[in-house]
Structures are given as C-alpha cells and as structure tokens.
Amino acid sequence: MLQNIGDMLKGQKWLAFLLLGLLILVFALWGAYGLVDLSVGAPKYGLKVNGEEIPVSTLQNAWQERQSQYQQQLKAEIPADVRARMQDQLLDQYTRTTLLQQRAQERGFRVSESALVNAYHHESSFLIEGQFNEIAAKSVLAQLGMSIPMYERQLRNSFQVGQLEQSLKLGDFMTESEIKRAFALENEQREIRYALLPLARFSAAVKLDDALLQHWYQAHTDDYLSKESVRLQYAQLRLDTVAAAVEVNPTDLEAWYKQNLARYVEAEKRRARHILITVAAPKDAAAEAAALKKAQSVLAEARAGGDFSALARKYSQDPGSARQGGDLGFALRSAYVQPFADPLFSMKAGEISEPVKTQFGYHIIKLDEIQAEHARTLADDHARIDADFRRDRAAELYGNRQESLQQKLETTSGSDLAALAKEFGLTVGEVPEYTRGGGGTLGVNAELSGVVFSDNVLKDQRIGGPVGLADDRMVIVKVLEHRLPKARPLAEVRSEVEAAVRKDEGTRAARAAADAAVKQLKAGVALDVLAKGLGVTVAPAALIGRGDPQPPAQVRDAAFAAPMPEGKPVYQALAMDEGGAAILAVLSTKPGTPGANPANDQQLITRAIERIRDADFAAYLGEVQRRASVKKNPAVFN
Image (cartoon, rainbow, N blue to C red):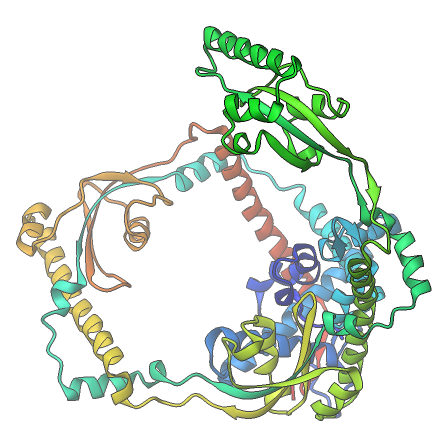
C-alpha cells in the first residue's frame, strides 16, 4: 500500500522529503504526456512508463489522499472538471517520478547499504530519547501502510534521484551581467505615496433593504451553507489500555528490571547549607573586597563553633534559603552553578568551605549529608517499575496490533466495526456531529478528517483507518450518517449578509472615489489637494523595497507591479481586500545594488542560481517525458 503520505507527516521532515519531494519538484509542470493506451480491455496496471507498471491500487490510494486533502481544505465536494484535472495531474506526477528513477538507474547512480542503514537509523520519527527504536519505526511505517523493505526501496530511489538532480545542476552558474541584473531587480526600490480611503466612511452611507439583501443572499448562497458533518462511530486503541492488560510474570519482571537497571539509578545527591554575602557593586573593587571581608568574618564565627543555621538567618542575603537557616535540601550536582558545585562535591560531611565566589556573590558552604548514588530496588519502587514494564511490553503489542488491524482492513471489505473492535480489543464510541474541523472526543486531527470524508468511507461505506491521534492512541471509524451542507435561511444569517453587503457596496463606492481621484491626478491636480478634499491623509514620499513591511502589502505589491514612471508619476486606484480603497502614486524607481550585508547578497545570488537550476531541471524533465512511452489505464480511477 503506497500512499501519498507526505501530508500525513507534518513535522516528520525526512519522510516528507523522501516520499513527496520528487512530486513537489515537478508539481508546476503538469501537462499532457506520452502515449495513452486506449485499447479494449481492462489492464491490470494503472500506469505504464517505459514498460514499468504502476499498480492500480497505488494510484487509487494516492488519489484518495489527494481528494481528501482537497475536500478538507475547501470544505466542499470536488467539481467534475476539477476532479478530472487533478487525476491527470496525479498521473503526470507519478509518470515524472518514475522517469526520474529510471534515468537515475540508467546513469549508474547507486546508494551504499551503509548509507541506507545510517539514514534509516537516524530518521527522527524512529528515535526515542535520541536513540533508534525498532518498535517506533515499525509503528510509524504501519500507520503509513509501509513495510521496512518498501521504505528502504523508497529511500534508495530518493537518494539516487537526488544524485541525478545534483549532477544536472552542478554546471549552472551566473555571469557577471546576470548577477548585476538580479541585484537590480531583487533590491529595486520604488518611491511611492499613497492614501487609504477607509471602508467605514463609505459603508455607513449604504442603504440596506430586503430586496438588496435577498439579491446578495441568492447570489452568494454558498457562503452561508451549514457545515458538512457525519454521525461517526469509532473504535479506539490506547497504549495504556494495552498496558493494563499485560500479564506480569515475576520472573520476567525481574529479568526486565536487571536489563533496564540504568533507568533506576539515582545519581549522588548532597544536602548543603550556605550563607550568601552579595557584592553591592559587582564591578567595583572596593565593594568586592568589602563583601569578601564580610564573608571571611562570618566564616570565622562558624568555624569558632557558631550555629550555622542561626548565622545563615542572621547574615545570609539569599532570600530563598536564609529563613530556613541556609538549607538547600538534597540536590544533584547539576542543580548548582559550577563554581558552587565543584567545592560542594569535593567536601566531606560536616565541613565548612572557604568563601566561594559565584555570579551571585560569596558563599560559605556547609555540607550536612551525602546521599550516595544508588539504584532503586524492585521492592522499593515496585509500582513504578511494574508500570514501566507494562508500558514497554505494551508498546510492542500496540504496534503489532495496529499493523494487524491495518492488514485486516486492506484485505477485507467488511464494515462491521463492532466485530473488529471485539477482535482487536478496541473501545467503541460515537460522535454525533463530526465536521471537517473535527468534533467530540476525537478532537481536531487533519489526517482523521481526510479519512472520514474520503470516498472509501463516505460512498463505499468502508471502515477507515487506523489513524494515529497521538503516539499512544489510534482509531478506526465508520460513518453512520452523512449530512451534506445546506443553505441556512436568510433570517439566520441576516447579520452576516448585512455586513457583507455593506463591505461590498462600501468598497465599490470607495473604489469609485479613488478612480475619480486618479483621473484628476492625471489631469494635474495635486495629490495633497485631492486627499484634503476626501478627508484622508497622504503618506509622505518614501523608497520601499519588495519586502518592506511599512505600507500595506497590497499597496506595496501594486507599486512593484505598476509600470516604471517615465518623467511623471504613475497613479493607480486599488480596491482593498479588507474593504475600502487606496490611491497609489509611484514617483520613481531606483535599481538595486549589492547591499551592506554580504551574507544577504550571497543568499540573493544563491536563490537566483537555484531558479536557473530549477528551470534547467524542469526542461530536462520535460524532454525526458516527451521521449517516454507512457500508457495509462482509462479506468484507473473508476
């Protein structure tokens, strides 16, 4: 089961790069491809690229993921024309990926076993506390419907294609004139002035009546639909539930405890008291000397037989411990700054140190007691060790059960969720109203929403999942009732409609005022005079760059999209996305040059070279595809 799993691994960067990176490279290059097999009969393959077959199931699973993502993002069904285009794009992506893998093989690019093993063992998704964990790897791959050999095969392909891409891009470079041109464009500045015509000034004058509201509502019914939802039955497996069911044999527990003894070793701790004398002015030599003299005086009292606790309450300037007679309690070495920890952990019980200097001042330390490093015994900490043992064993059982459930769902067409729950020890529940934004005890989970609203679950009424809601919780789901979006009555959404009409009509009026102002500006009227008449303020002339945060982004983008001024300003009226309008004047342009920051300049050149390399690589892909023999199964998505 090979799915388009890049979207399932947000945050798992290496797997996302590995399994989706090639598709991203060619995402902008969709188009017609090769030869289309229209022969009579139903081929078993979904796509054939230079004789290499891609199974129907692979493409159908990838399509399922793609349409789920679309539906989740847009909260709507996919129109027929868009569906056909997306399916063609998906076939094209698989075609290009396969061609790249074939070319990498033909060109002799290879990956060593040691490189594969190293990458496998350093995949962040497979690490627990920084160490590779076979159970974690198995669990992650099971959620993705992948076996270890399948993962390694994808990893090898990714490395080989990466080598091919690198070899093609190494020869690209920029000439001196191209670099100057890149700086001129990227660092270009434009001198602008602008005035904003606020929406509120125009929307207040909009006259609302029932006819206008009804007309808007009927023209924008899709904006006022109820949310698509389902009544959802689910069965979940929790790691703690599996752990609770683990049978603990005393012999096994003893053996496991000995194997994991390091987990129960407590480092040496020391209980100390201290008296802190702070330095009034840390950078003043006289203040420093005075603090040291005071500390030595207190030390003399302590060593002369004075009660250390009483001395700490009298002299210590540490507000946290002075009231407790300077008592710091038992603590590890790591609890203290090094200048304090070093003498403390070299002392014997009962000793009092010389004044110790830290950033806080001078400390007089008395060591009261030493708690040597020791391991908690099974008898001493039985409850915790028992719980750790159960959870450790449960993790493996959890992964195995998840993998078995995945295989069961792939190989059967049953829809009896209760029977599956009984077979695999799952807990059954129900969410009365689950939307694409989640709901109920299942919360918000993008992957789960994609599964719930997929064709397999909605139309084919199959059980969906398993989906991991957390590292220790996974669910399978079944839709009991599907409620399509429907128009909410005007009475229910009247306030929303009124706000939308005021914004639309107000923006139209503001844009009309801005258009009229631009005509007058072109006729020679001064911008400040027009602005005064409109009751708005004009921003002073300023040079801005392409990424300047000061002007509104829409104004800035329009300034750089406008024609270059030739002797006189270029004026433009804008309808603002947030409502209202703007009057823009582009006064002059200033070609860019290298900046004061060499690192930024190098980044600019690097980006420019990357664009050239990407364009060259795209051209290479296009030519490889043009020469390829590609056949598709017309019924692959039926």
